[in-house]
Image 1 (spheres, rainbow, N blue to C red):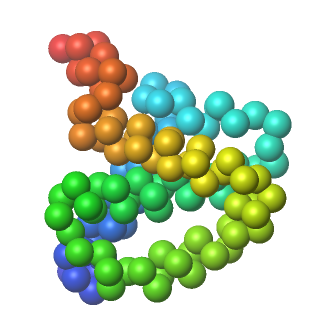
Image 2 (image 1 turned 135 degrees about the vertical axis):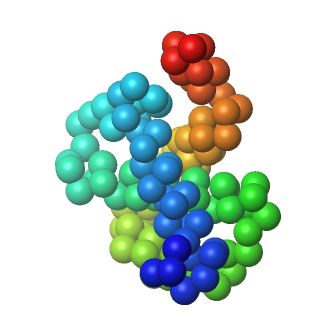
Length: 119
């Protein structure tokens, strides 16, 4: 934690990486569901999901991420062309991000099934 500017920066990074973990085939299988896209397009979608989901988790935890707005905006600005090209992309990413955040918080059917399988 000492490598981060503050607690919010630490949790923003943690939440972002946790969101990525939900894409695995044993969780929400997000990485396999967007076939037909280039590797760059898939990467961009996943990064958008992780940034949105991290914001959802921060809000749920009551964290003030306003100090990260410039960083997050600059990061996502790189994907603006993809967002302009596909008008559904943002809504699809937001839906996937909410599903991933719910999974992490144990609010989804997949999370419940995973806990039952582990027991």
